[in-house]
Image (tube, rainbow, N blue to C red; front, side):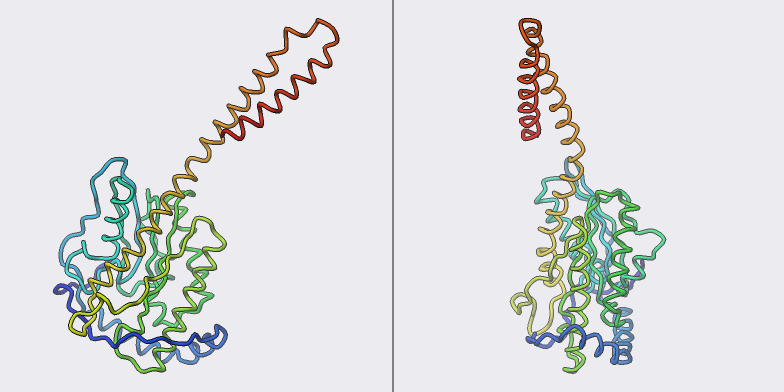
Length: 321
């Protein structure tokens, strides 16, 4: 998806982060529903801001050379589009990929499906997610959904659909990493009421993502890193470059863990085949062993001893696998 580009990493005015008491989920749903007109105003302001904001000007270079290359696919909005930075190498997706390749000691390529205003529903219903061949798909969505007042029910249903679509394209063993939303209520000065509503909406969508992960072993959710003033402000202005870096630092270990889980799932059929072969061989060997004893006296005790030895061999073969 196309988006506008502009100069590098211009800081954006921000108010200092504050702590907020959580709003109970049922109350949050009612408040967000009642405040949809207010959310629409913020969504329109966001769209206008994105149309003139800073995005990378250079060409993407989604390839890191190395042995036994792996593949990622990123589906996201500003973290993948690169809001606030000039170079694609400074985006959350590129920095995550670089850290993963370093940790794994392998080559890496990746695809990106992105727009600054991409929503979960739009992504889930795209004709193609460009995830073919991906080992792990990383989802960094939600900012536009917060401002569109997307319900937690719709978000959860669309995320489940997205995971199903990913499996159709990339294969049944693919892993999916879902990033929780950043504290976007702190990205610019907004009225306290809007701040609390946005924070409550973020909590609802993150909780829905965790429900999906709880039902699917191949889906993991990675929290946004702890929000701190250190390194995120330059002369009291917000540094988008620092945010991309910190987000990538938090995401990379989760992606590495997801790749390791994919390795395990792909190796499971081989392990089962080896275990079955070992079992068959052990049983055959134990049954063949006492054959010479048959004929010298009653064969029944011999057969019983053979069965016991075969059972012990089977147990040993299974535990060794």
